[in-house]
Length: 114
Image (cartoon, rainbow, N blue to C red; front, side, top):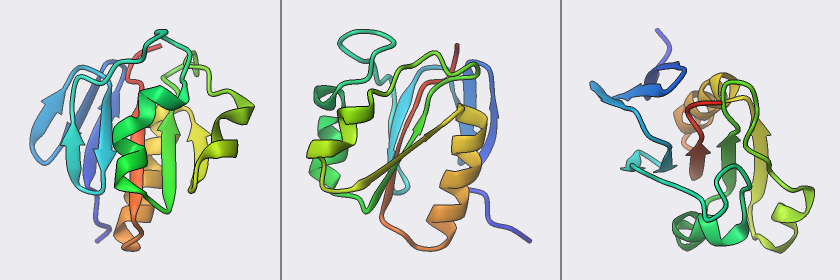
């Protein structure tokens, strides 16, 4: 049976470890930083990722929302010392579960709505 750290995601909600969250969040490995928000709403910027940068993952997986409305600038990863991949949040959840199962030092930033 496949390990699933994140049990479920649907518009505006994500279930991790038996708890449901209704606000955007950051994952640092298996640690949850809830109520994450960006300085400019749907525009992701480097300063929005301070906790991720401090964590120093090998990979950051970004969930851009159900419809991909959170913008991830192409140049975002240029000054970061880790790989960045972005997906619609439903696909980002699947990728995160796969990467964390493989014992990678991985982080995530998930936009849960639009």
